[in-house]
Amino acid sequence: MHNYYQQSGGEDKVVDQEMNLLKKNGIEVDLYSIHNDVIKEYGTFEKLKTGLETVWSYKEYKRFKNYLIKQKPDIVHSHNFFPLLSPSIYYACNKLNIPVVQTLHNYRLMCPAATFLKEDKICEKCLSASLFNSVKYGCYRGSKIQTVPVVSMIGINKMLGTWKNKVDRYIALTKFAKNKFVSSGIPEEKITVKGNFLQENSNEVLKLSRDSNNLIFVGRLSPEKGIQDLLEAWNLVSKKKNSKLLIIGEGPEKNRLEKLYDSENIVFLGKKNSDEVIRYMKEAKYLIVPSIWYEGFPMTIVEAYSVGTPVISSNIGSLKEVVINGETGFHFNYRNIDNFHQVLERALDYELHDQMKENVLSNYKEKYSEEINFKKIMLIYNEVIEEKKNGQISAV
Image (cartoon, rainbow, N blue to C red; front, side, top):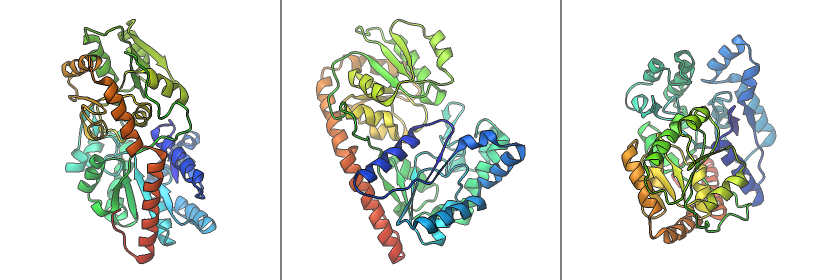
């Protein structure tokens, strides 16, 4: 079950890959989905109604319940219910005694913005204090009015016990994320950690990257991705060793940054398809992930690992956990441009780079391959189904 956003992202990719993985291994899968593009066609009244239904949609409850009666699934795996499907889909499953697994791709159940980011700085006021802080600052899409229904969705469902009682198992992408959700009140025993993986349908996957001094960034060119910090740090690197910084992606900051950082050693490549991205990663010395928010589990890191390319990342949140400093890449201090450029210089000069590439590929095979992830997801499904039958849920 998945509610697609208007702009495609990593969540959509994970949904497709998990479905393909299950089908590949003989599991019957059906997708129940809706797309936020329909909101564009709504009038003012329908948009207001959608805001209210974000909290709990009776229309979707009935529709999804009828769908479940027809399909008779063993389990429902939800990736995103926001905003059109709403938490009511959990209640439909619960009514029919069908177990529910929810993957936590972002921090929406705690933070209306889903990022713990305000004015380009980490903010956890809605977790440590009151959700109404987000209304004060208009954290959802920069609008106080639009933030209200999101706050209501989080707060009312927390009060109703939806997050605690209507979901049988949560999948957090990292231990860091799990700890955040536990601190919000979700029982620890209901959360299992399972990272993302890469669908191995490319002959580029599971091969060591080729020698190159080029560095690469792949992602949306927007403030939370830390792209300007990267460009500032790269400009301070004095010994670039004939290397270039390749920027792949589109976004609201692209035109401004292209003009501001017009240099022969910075190349804006625009949007590339998945196969092209893998090829560029294979030829890069490092992937750079300079995000200034906690991130969930960037698929770009898994893609880089699949071809043995080390990663340089900011040392916050899940990135600090997924990128092992000195083993599969390097960390730089959060929002510290001077330290960032020093880490880039050391990385370009790193004498054990070949050994690091071997470490990266080994790490990928052990944690992020199709085989490993199929075993993990089936273990979760089977245990949740069995526990639902027995009337109890425990951690995997």
